[in-house]
View (cartoon, rainbow, N blue to C red):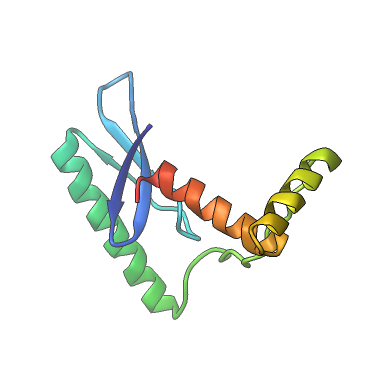
Length: 114
């Protein structure tokens, strides 16, 4: 998967097989931001324009569009997985919540190559 970044926004990039153009979709904004480009330079420029248009729209409305994330995250797992996570957190001297946040943040940074 190809990823682009602009001003804190992260976009997933795909190629349209039919016409060879690029399609981008921002994956970390509460609203929907999409853009197209005929080549990489055009795609990057359209990404920047789309972000600017999105932010201008947000300013006109006085807030972020869409539903922002709450910060709450429900996770279901098998009891034996829960026991392993609980033991790992205890060995690290952390609550399960603190340990999970650290582990998830580390995994996200690897995927997003931060």
